[in-house]
Image (cartoon, rainbow, N blue to C red; front, side, top):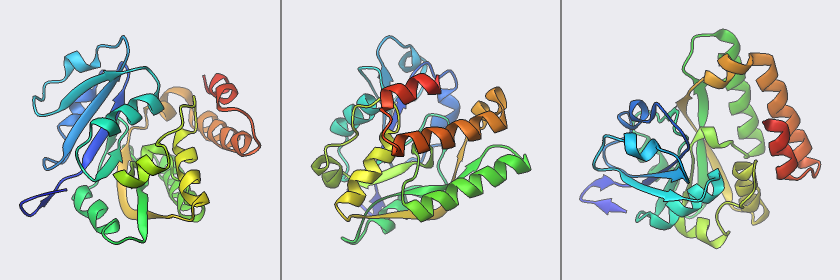
Length: 225
């Protein structure tokens, strides 16, 4: 969607008890529609200080919240952003250029963390390499997609975990093309700092292997917790 010469995309942010939301909201691009979708029973919405942001509620669950946000969106392009992730400079322009033709219908960015730790920088490079090879980016890479395509494939499946990978799988099964952009999102390293580097890496790989082995997302979510 265009207003004058400015490209507008709809950025959908699912939140649940996100204490630092304003820190990240102020870093968002100015020429976008921002939709924050709070899970039931949380107070994140009440802490938002930005009047231009669309604030709404849905049933708890990242897939539920993102699907609900997509229904409220007025743009032809949707971008799903984790609350603790910062987009690269000129992100809306890069997204619009990637989706300009008919060939590419969705994509994501390369990954980086908000730390100088070499071990985490290496993990980010491995994650970016994996997503380029498999075309199965995770949600923390800021997945974007044409809205009409999102609706045609039924949006996110209402599953407890791996909804991001599942969405990309649906696109691949229909032989629709996904592009990973070289620009990097900067996401919080707080989970790694809290739980430990090795634990998080092993857990993520085990979850992915079990998911592709047919283990249900509900059981994976129990393991994740």
